[in-house]
Each structure stands twice: as structure tokens, then as C-alpha cells.
Image 1 (cartoon, rainbow, N blue to C red):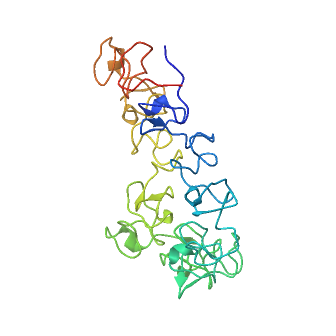
Image 2 (image 1 turned 120 degrees about the vertical axis):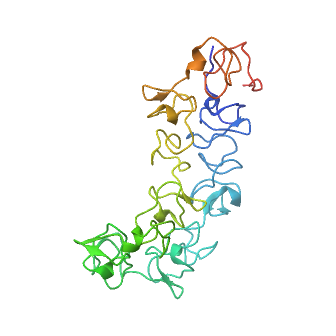
Image 3 (image 1 turned 45 degrees about the vertical axis):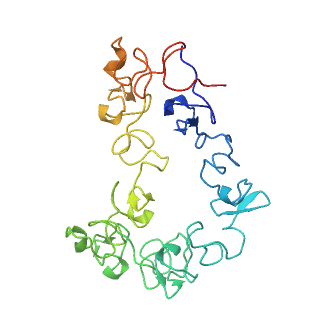
Length: 308
């Protein structure tokens, strides 16, 4: 008889033992399950196991917050009307807060909405307002005052484009983006930067803008840890070029599954799990291990007995 998956904090052996799908250090991790559990200070954030909480969420101490500041039981930092933390200007810039508009103080391009930091100030438009106005060729880019536009944005002339190439009113990639060299401001060979197309999974990046999908982790474009169904994944953060999926997850082919078996779009048990023998990584006949179904009561297992 199979039991229901365990909640956050309960003992586990493999990910499928947990409601959250995350087994870490022998315990079900509740981060990502939409419930305030473990030692979280707010839903799926804070505490020792989950990511820091955003501004306005409940906290007990600084480490519970993305900003590192807990005041009055709430995370603050980017909405307090002060220049603090690693902000380069009031409530903007740095690693935690939003990027700064034109005219605000900056240390490097990543602090600025337009991606340009010149002489300690964000170079930008008269209106960084998410609307195409003034002499912009596209939203908040192009023209005389705004940053140059990235590839695929509208342009009126070559000067509107970071690539220096405007073809049929669209910024196109520069010739350097096809020379099989890593040059200019490319983050990897012929991709990334403002002039070339974004880089794919596994390629080098400097910021999320260098990647498609826009997720840069440890200097590498990745879609395997963003808790989103994207890239070539068959299910959230698994399958395709990401780690293989466990039983029950969506799949496109056998290669997406840890079991090596994709049945009707879901990872199923592989043939070894149906041969009436204890083999492979099974702990008992056709059950246990990361590939087969969980064992019933009284069958052998490697995990310690779970307590309620």
C-alpha cells in the first residue's frame, strides 16, 4: 500500500516522497509548495532553507530578506526612500533593487535601466516610462538621448542600434555576431551583449539580458533552476538539457526520464520495474529506488522509517 507524499519537514529518501517534490538532507523541503512551513517566515521564503523574502514580506531577522534588512517584522530596503544596502541611488541600483533611471547614480551598466553608466550617472532618456515617445525609435531606446536598441527592436537609422545595423526598420545583428569569435561585448561566442542575439542554455552570460530565456546563474545561461517551464524542458526544470525527470513528470521522449521510460507524455516505470524481480536500483521486487514506484508496507527500503 502506497502512502501519500510527505509535507515539509518530514523525512524523505527521494524527491517523489515529498509534496513539494524537493528532498534535501533527508527532509522534505517546503520551499515552492505555496504553504508557510518549515521555519519559513513567509510563504516559501525566509528561514534557513528557503530564499530571502521580498520587500513587504514577513521576517524575523535580516537574513530572512533579499534586501538583508528586517524592520518591524517586515523586509524593507528598496522602498524606504533612503540610499542604503548596496544601492547606487535611492531605492535603485545594486544587486537587490530595481535598476536606476537616467540621471541616477551608478557604478556600472547593470545599475541602469538603459544599461549605460557614464561618469557615475545612468545615461538615459528624458522619459524612461515604458512608452515610445520623444525621438525614441522603440520603447525607451534609440534616438539622441536614449540607449541604443538591442537586436529586433525598431530603428530609424544605424545609430539607433547597439549592433550598428538597421535593416528594414529593425535592428539586426552585427557582422561580428557571425565571425565565430568572442569579441565586442559578447558574453559568449557570437551571442549575448547588446549587439547580438541572446545566448542559449549552457552559454556564458554576464546578466540575464544575455540569455534566452532570461536567467543567468553563476555566469551561465540556464533554464534549469528558475522554477519555470521554459527552454527545452519537458516539465518544470527537468527534461531536455536539464536533469532527467522523476516518475509522473511530463516528458517528450524516454531521454527526459530518470527511469528511461516516457509513457503517454509522463515519465513511467521502466521495464525492470515490471519484471517481478529485485534488480537495478530497486529495494524490493519492482519497487523502491529513484526509478520505480514506492514500496508498500512491509517491503524492503533503504530510507529510515518515516514518522508522522
